[in-house]
Amino acid sequence: MCAFALQEARSRGLLLQAIDLYRGPFLAGFSLSDCPEYENWILLERQCWERFYLETLTLFINECAAQGDMTAAIALAQRYLATTSWLRRCTAV
Image (tube, rainbow, N blue to C red):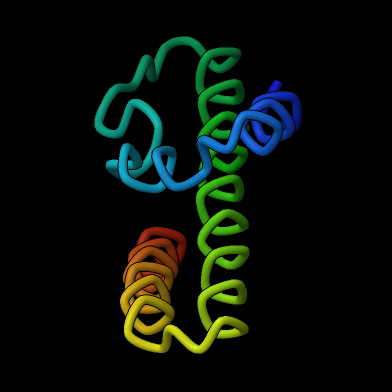
């Protein structure tokens, strides 16, 4: 599902909008601890959307840097690092 969403976003030029809309892990804070099927599904969905977000950021970081727009590249890289730092803290628990 997420690979399809990424392809669709690329084909419509909506990647920058996708970056702006990202607010963190998919359904963060919502859990059904008595339903392992849901927990497995939500884990995969979260990983998929986080990967989509990070890949999209990487695409724009590289594009901005190639065009010499280092201010934009640095701002995007900071968002990337903030996200990956957060992910490392979550997985370290």
